[in-house]
Image 1: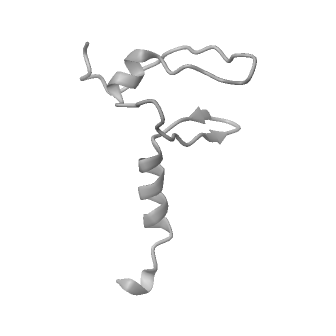
Image 2: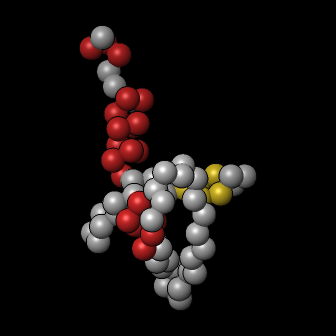
Length: 70
């Protein structure tokens, strides 16, 4: 499997309960395991993104960091 690419595209189908299955190749490339928590980000113009929770948590921590600590 070539994991040197930086951009990927897959298709998923939304089931009756609104669930999607993340393709195996995507799970392997991004090390997504059963039980992992992902964040759903949405923009009316740009669509939906699903970054790992850790990425969002790190970004939120930087945004909301107490500036007086610097």
